[in-house]
Image (spheres, rainbow, N blue to C red):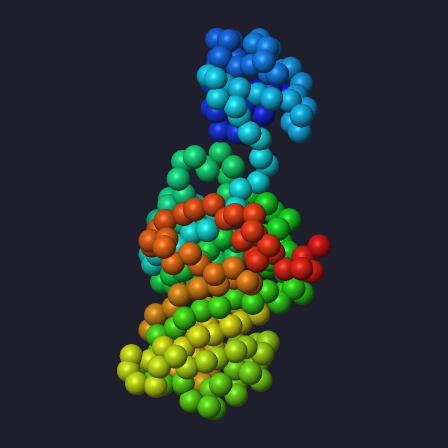
Length: 239
């Protein structure tokens, strides 16, 4: 990989800025001052420093966002704020994007990454990745609703959902329930409750596959997902 491309990918600066930095003598490769922006690097073995600090290369970034209401799960929109406005600048050079989407009024766990292959595997209908939600409902959950979710609910457009898990969390108002679905149809959770004569008043995603939302994250906060957490997020049959 070219030195200037490496430094740009690592967030040191734009391609133009990086060339100026290299020209100033602030960059070293294996202890020797680098003078050419187009010099070739072995990313896995060469040691690069800029202004005396070692620069570590990584191709992908994986971020957990506790999404607040009022933000679109999109990279850009001309009128409405998007979740990208919540991502710290230090990650923007990776060009992350939201994996799947949460409705504008839904809160909770949203994964952002620039790893297209991983995103495809997590979103593939064939993988049936479980996603867990907490919903506040207009009415209490009854046994008929639990059975209907378990069998698969027929939505307003005639589509029958995959079997889902529904568990009541409170028998008196306010009514809360936990839902686990294995697909991601448009407004699916809200439409499933509509099909059983109930209404979602509030919705939060708390878990994706085996990885739960870090409850210490305030609404709108982002943090990187650790290697151990990635093992919980990525299904065993994700290849």
